[in-house]
Image (cartoon, rainbow, N blue to C red; front, top):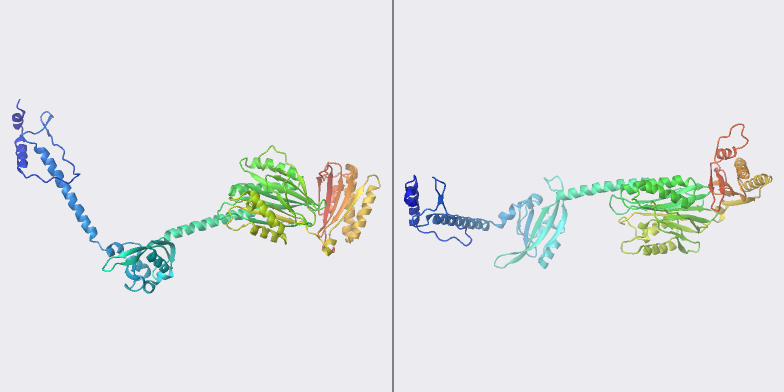
Length: 593
């Protein structure tokens, strides 16, 4: 079948063929530029049966139609691009810089003569006179310290930037602004090219205010955290009769997350004093909370008057219950003036430094166990001599630990500083911190406790006395004890009422020891500048307790009598086996001091 003749009879076909022949007779369009997309071949769809066949009339008219359309489109795009380029090139510098919201000033020459300032600049600083030197026409740049910087830019040919310069509020502006200024070297064209400086200032007021609000919030949070930390520390140190004590605490860094360093001084009675320092690892409220619980527990355990290692044993179990993942270290020491020594136990803490009366400093590190909360360890106690003229310092690792040095080097430095640190305990605290470089910017919390056992002479020495009597037992022991106590108290010139109360207390304590204790027995009387202490020791470990005696009971009233007439009383087990029962009386103001 002749498909061409048959298809020519279809409606609309003669018109399409005529249009194709007309296109063939048109002059051919020039080729498009490289990269032009070639036109796709058109196809004519058979409207009768859906078959597709190319139009034939001895030429490929559809290809020429598609190519012509593509070339026309590309030519129009190139013309538009050329027009846009001509538009940008026609813009002047003033047109570009004048519409910027940033501050722009253009100066030239060694005197920085003003060539141009944009509208944003005049809105902030007011109109400026072109041609005048910047020192006269732009005084605000001198106030901001930019003129020397512009000189450097001209000499070096390199841009310089200064950040966040404060611009005072001008008339019409309710608040000062902050701008970051960039000075860029440029070369102005002309018959004789001249170098200049383009001053560009972007406003950063909002960023500065946001940063300041953030810093203020961080300061408030830190103040709250430090307040919490300090509230958990002793507000006022107890001052023992025989020791001079001072402490210092320095929170680390500028962050809100304070640490868990702590210290305490606890008077145990009978002239004995407990000294404690510890460090809960980590930072933040959690560490401070654990520290507060441990410090409270130490004060409760101290009232039991237990040996140092037993106190740490109890703390170890408590720390594991509070938080098994929280590590804490601690040193617990007890000073007894009658024995002239410190008995201490350490749970993974820094060694105590002790300075002897001759100035020699040594580390007390014999009794050292693992940190609190590890469990499964039996702590031990160890003694160190601490008589009149001695001093000691207890501290946390923040005082001696540095990231760029071994911790032993820090302890060595502390030993050297402590050997030459004289004065009151508070002065020694200050000197040690300065010697170790502790400032407000130090990156770790620091706690230290300084104690001194002073040498007393002259009138001060007359206020401290000791007297002791060994009791051999038998019926004559009680009368001998009463006679001894009466004679000693009379020689100390106590008033009659205090004398009689002291003799009664000594008599009851001796009677209690004779009835319930075992030899050896000893009566000791001690006078300080603030109290009278009466103590009886024996070889039995059973601690007495105060109980209510019935009217028919023939015994059980001795301890009740002692507790009633004295200021305080207590008992404890002694290291060699046995016990000590004591009471004390506060001296009235009328007693010579």
